[in-house]
Image (cartoon, rainbow, N blue to C red; front, side):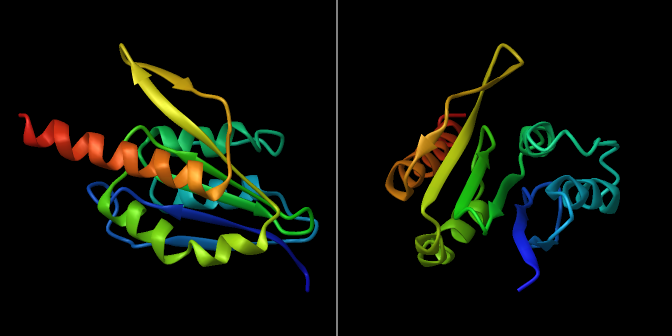
Length: 148
C-alpha cells in the first residue's frame, strides 16, 4: 500500500457542480498538492506552499467546501467544517460515517463567521461530536432561510 492518506473535498453545490473531489496522497507526497489541484481545477486562485498543510484546508473550507484529510499511517482523519453545511456535505458525512471507524483519531475544526471575520474554533474530537456540529450548522442554515 503506497497511499499515505486521502483528501476529500465536498464542494458547496451552489458553487461547484461536481459531487466530490477525492484524491489519494501517495507516500512522499504532501496533502497540500491535492488542495492545490482542487484550487487549480476550479480556478480558485490559491498558490499554496508545501508547508501550508493546515492553511490550505482552512482556505478551501472558508469558501464553503467541506474538506477532509486523512493520515492513514497514523490513523488520523481531520474535518474542516465550513460555516454552513449544505445538503451534499451532510449527505456525504452520513454515507461515509462507517468508513470513519477505521481511524483512531477523528477530529474537526469548525468555522464561525462573525462580522465578516473567519474564526476557526478548537478541534472537536469523535464522530458523535462532529456529527452534532455538522447537524447544527446544517439546520441553523435551514432555519435562517426559513425565517427570511
